[in-house]
Length: 173
Image (cartoon, rainbow, N blue to C red; front, top):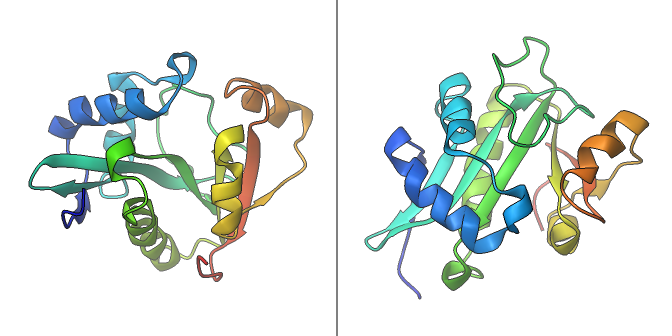
């Protein structure tokens, strides 16, 4: 698969293909519901992105301003974004297996990080599955020592999940 792609804001009608992408890359125990994606689109329109080609969606990014060291619980709706957000939280970034290695995740992240910088946020954060920790480290994210409350949230993601942060001034490698 070498087809060119473009990044654009996610729309509600993208949720079904996003769910298919999600199911193709994550274990069933951590799949999130259609309601979760619609909730994030409602509270933060324009910060959730998709990459598409003529063949359809290739990947997606769900990200939004949030509070450092306090990621939302898995598959939990949010009422609103915090007024005192200080971190660009990468809730989820996934790419179809057949499209991995084509720079799609980096294109999605680049678009999201530009928005975060314009909003004056200082850093970006995420929860990495054990299998993805090395990927995020290559992009400049570093693991943070988790508090008891954070460890409880990380447990939802499976053994070895880590909370990671990166300064927004830092460029991806």
